[in-house]
Image 1 (cartoon, rainbow over the protein chains, first blue to last red):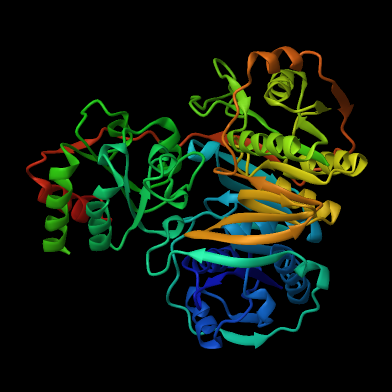
Image 2: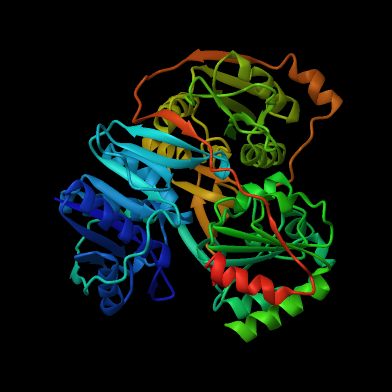
Length: 322
Length: 245
């Protein structure tokens, strides 16, 4: 018996969130005695890169190298993971909550007859039954949800467990699958991804700007600060609505929900809809010239001052310290 | 062209989230319910597509009688008819089965809903319905255009988007900027009163999960303010106190 983990990769590398999912599966298997952790990877990626998944606790990686699976074709990925699940004889599937992961997991839930819980924030309580804690109301509350099916799928939120990094290399075995042709009927014609930058949903530090930045031409100081910190850049909804920044940087209730260790908000007043996207952050710093900005109530640290004055100074101070 | 839009009836985004009955029930005191914001995007796009292609736009909700004003609002925004499945939504699987049944009976070409509800944030129902019906499902979809029976979409991925082409029928979980939210006008509000709203019973009671208890996050302590001329102090705090650098 094993716990199966569906891992994603982009630009030739296993995603960090998938390594967190493997770490979660490892901790789960330790807790429930479900045997070893087996990962499944789909599409073209080097075996040497897949072997690194061992550091997070996977003993083995099944690799279906079919080129047609390199892009995230939802139906085909669901069929592929379902076959891997049966082959491994797993009862539990773990995956990182993501754009592709969510879409694939929902179909798998029906294919496998497996109960699915998303936004999982810690290991399940298995003393009696199988109670899973998950984030709800966009981070404003938690639900304790009992899964009543024998097979289970958990889509894990960032920071649900500490990342394991001390495992040995995993063995990589190729996996032959028969995926129905119909699963490839939908075509991904083109992918646009900002390369080289830290991806916002996965970032450990996020620097966001709001309307207080006064215009897109002033984003240089946000980008400089992000660069110093190795952070991703985000923005508030009004900023993406007026087109100062692209939509995929919008943090909030109807945008990206982030869960970094450090969130720095610059010139953002802190409307409740914005807070909903950042309330899973470990530490929040707010820089705003208005001492009455509601964001200060949700912050750990704050500076009342003009962003145009404070941010360059902060950047210099960080450069000196880091 | 038959379009089905599934909407949720959820607390307004500014609601204070609280629980009662020993943290086993959501406290609806003083809470205003709305069409889920993501569902509102799906509905707005569906109205545009219906106007573009002709045909019929049906809006559906799984809920008790108290959700009818939310369905009426969807009718006022532009849906032609509404269906309420008379049941408390128990879990995503329960809801997906009800939608799949109505969708099968109705023979819809396009099924739209929000990428997720803003109460439970599961984001699973579209994919489940897709698998139950053997239809392709896509989420989160930020652009959706029709060219005959070909659907051209943009789906948001981490740090970007992918462009897709698929054939009807299909299911999409939607998000901004697929369309601008539509505010019902007076004519819409008046006509919504007489548009058909049918009530049907649940077809299955089967579930996969049961939520037993709720918790609120720990209360945040007061903010520690640093003087704007002492920014290096903030760096020290982040490094030594918060330990996040």
